[in-house]
Length: 210
Image (tube, rainbow, N blue to C red; front, side, top):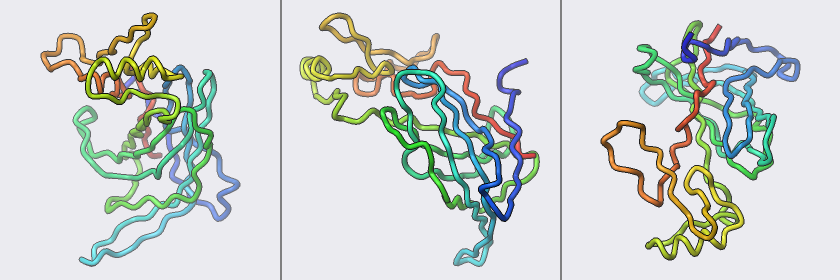
């Protein structure tokens, strides 16, 4: 069975006391050597009206990240959002749940987030969690520069080398390419090499609403 057919079963249930609800998994991956999962709680649902008098839906949710194995702590950052779209792989309408995580960040919870969308979450709808792994804090990692010499000097002075962009070879540094095998596209530039966060991962990121 292809991993694309394996989905989290997501129950869309709202209760008066959100504290009694259980966390439901929506994403699992490994970044920077740490395996972690992200969970969601649906607290409440309401509706609103746009200026053109069309209805939109509001979902109050809470999010939790759990680091399971690995030396680097991954934390939630930014504000999650919800966006309707069409997924060519699943050949159907899907709801994209966008979430940011940042390495070297201790933030396990984001509570009472209001997700707004013109389309509502319904039974059997596919929900895809799109997690953006943001760069490490600049005070521990630097790759700024307009030429190779400057970039190498900055990397040599960094206390952390982002494995998605570079590999260390003594006092030399090599760019990591994320070009797919057999692709005719240009190799990524030295400034963006390895920044494709999903490269090399079979992600557990698909849920189906029960």
